[in-house]
Amino acid sequence: MGSTRFLVLLAAAAAAAAALLLAAVPAARAQEETDHEEEFSYISGEENGPEHWGKIKPEWAHCGTGEMQSPIDLTHKRVTLVRGLGYLNHSYRAAEASIVNRGHDIMVRLDGDAGSVVINGTAYYLRQLHWHSPTEHSVDGRRYDMELHMVHESAENEAAVIGLLFEVGRPDRFLQKMEPFLRMIADKKDREEKVGVIDPSGARGRASVYYRYMGSLTTPPCTEGVIWTIVKRIRTVSKYQLKLLREAVHDEMEKNARPLQAVNNRDISIFRPYPHKRY
Image 1 (cartoon, rainbow, N blue to C red):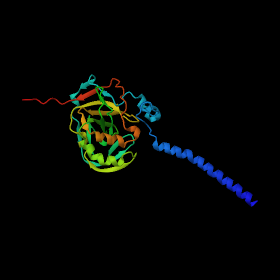
Image 2: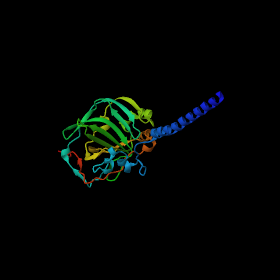
Image 3: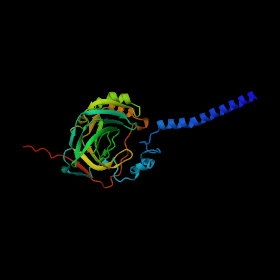
Image 4: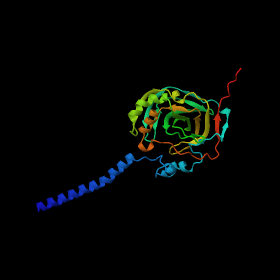
């Protein structure tokens, strides 16, 4: 009787262990898939590719139905000269910052007060910078090698983004300062490192001619009502710096530019200062 009871208990224990193992397998697989799966992709044709962003989550609907989406082609046939826009009135200052690998891009977050830019009388405070490669916006159909977005936010939580376009050439000085930290967070999603004090004025540069239009965020949830300012002067970035940025993000995000969106009769303005008079 004792031997039979022992065998019954042994069989019950084995069955329980097997059940636990079977339950653990799908849970482990689900965790593995979650760890490696991105919510959205830049690869056309994928289930979570750009053409499907608007259907992935209800709060991302604007990505598919919005009429003022970004990026767009800045074709000069549609651009209107508006000198009344005025110079970009910014007052940036050096501030503490961190660099973050978000998987789909590399972001420099300003942890301190980095100053602001004033647009139409409203101050928009600089919150973060991040890079896309190739450029998201195009000029007369041409896309360049990299685009830097300087993301600002007003006290009313409205967004204004300054975009700078780059082509391969001489190294970008601002990125040079980020290179050691880029190597530290390379291929490590959600990895964050303090970079100390940075001066965002170096990222902005001094160019004064720019395009202006109303658009959206270029990643989900594709929120509209964003004031876009694209600096006309094309800057340079080295092949090495471009490679660092591309290899730092998730494998499928090495090219992280959203496809061009329909302009839908939006106004595209350009500001250009009056030419200097010669006496």
